[in-house]
Image 1 (cartoon, rainbow, N blue to C red):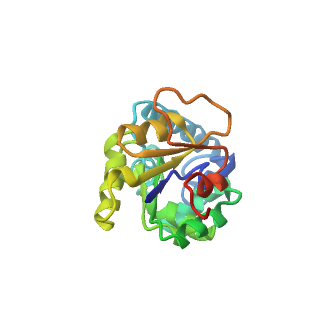
Image 2 (image 1 turned 90 degrees about the horizontal axis):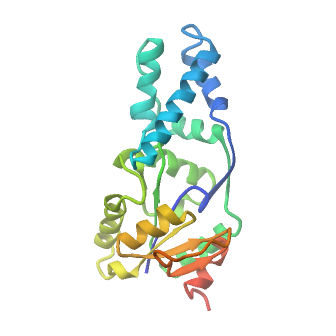
Image 3 (image 1 turned 180 degrees about the horizontal axis):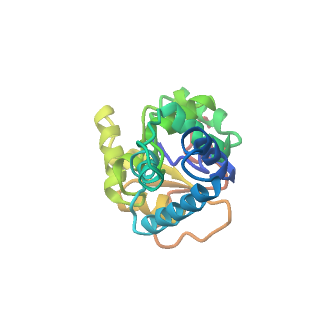
Length: 235
């Protein structure tokens, strides 16, 4: 068995999203003498709308690679360099993040069974930043590797995005087969559909009692803490 997890609202829960909190810090450090905060805020909102348009087309808009150079083009100066740690700081400042209830215990149980675990995430932030946040939250050591759409360029349910994780996991565990892989996620359109199209199983965290008709999930749970039982682990 191999498990690949979605990131946001599956492993990491985010209840408040406020891009302006880290943007103000960014502005004060780099652009205070070039524009007002209102000007950079309005431009940030324009870039967010562009991001949403691209996402509807299945295309990612990477924060460091694509968005940061736009601020330099609009307001002048060199593109702001941002380390992985700073990128993680920015993302955590924009979101109040916490580990999903019961997740740490579930991951420990799965690890004790020797089950390899990976993460595949739709995010404009790099895999390094996502890994850093997992480390800060105390669960990073459970995962062999994190992939982000920020590096791949396209978002789930893109089959190629799934495929790079599948092939990497199978190459590291040659005794396993594609049908031994389960993707765990909370969004039907990206996670269940993407797993189905990639020929792997899906464990769907269905918090809203939705119907599962088009591409049936192999497992349906209401919260991540139910995963081990659904997989028959520790019975």
